[in-house]
Image: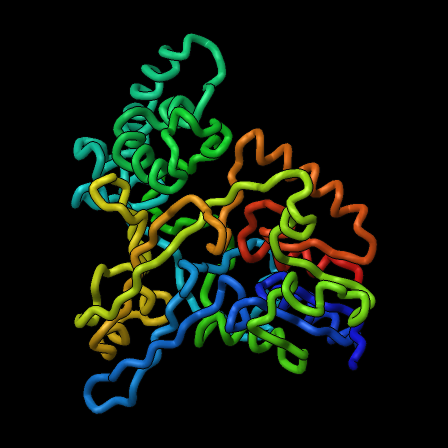
Amino acid sequence: MTHYDFLIVGSGLFGATFAYRAKLMGKKCLVIDKRPHLGGNIYCEEVEVEGTYGEHSRTINVHKYGAHIFHTNNKEVWDFVNSIVEFNRYTNCPVANYKGELYNLPFNMNTFNRMWPDVHTPAEAQAKIDEQKAEAVSAINGREPQNLEEQALCLVGKDIFYKLIKEYTEKQWGRDCKELPAFIIKRLPVRMIFDNNYFNDRYQGIPVGGYNKLIDGLLEGVDTFTNVDFFDSEYRDWKKYADKLVYTGAVDEYFDYKLGKLDWRTVCFKTRVEDTPNYQGNAVVNYTSHNEPYTRVIEHKHFEMFGQEIYNCPVTVVSEEYSTEYKEGMEPYYPVNDDRNNALAEEYRKLAEKEEGVIFGGRLGQYKYYDMAPVIEQVLMIKI
């Protein structure tokens, strides 16, 4: 039986990056994952479709667990991922669809002109927003906003709130905006420029050939097993197999829920092939009305195909994304940021700090929402 320096539970970005760094330092790692594939939530399902004009078949990389766009201001992180696989020029410019009306996101001058056709300049947009904010600020009469609805109305006013925030947020969280904490939306981006780039980060893109290329590069030469549930396998007694454990599963499950269960939101997808080369003209369209049960529609080819290349592939793959409350057997996605869960998570983190020989990492292991780049940044700072 091989004895490893590290047993790594979970082959997502945290686990795979840790394994890569440990391997470079001469450490021997075993990575196990309960799913039938490696890569965690950045795994892409490769769908082959026929090309046009006698071309060979093309592959559309379907983001099986939702849209993932890599973005960062950290040059070290950007250089690191590009040393594994080259990234393309994809820029995230999502569109909001409210009952057939289309708005650019994040909120910018294009959004404001579409919302208020008589608004053409930054000064006019600011005046309109200030006018609407004043009504909301007056209504709370000097006190701090007590919930997400009050906070959003005080930031952007009623027109943007009711068309682009309220119903979308309620679908996303399964709760009325009056029941959600104000801090969720305190940093709502409002830009007085004609710029549809969602992120402010300097670096942004998608791996050429899909995220599987990144995971394969990170885990090259590392022992891996899929379809292995840590808790229902011999590896639960991990000290027989490794000196240390890297755990990226749910932190409350590791401790057998001894303090209580943490709440999660999760998402599910309905994916289909559409017999058209260009279904919606954009990778991500958010549906902000309750009229549609899904929160957004993802058209995957736009992550990696640009210009005429889109039309050289005569069909496309789209996914409707549905947000729902987590139930046993589902994949947990998003921590629920309310007082109860934040307090409980902090108690679990204190237990984790005392767990000798165990590193807790990633969104599930720390019960914190992380984008991809900060996950890698964390791993790069760990002394292995």
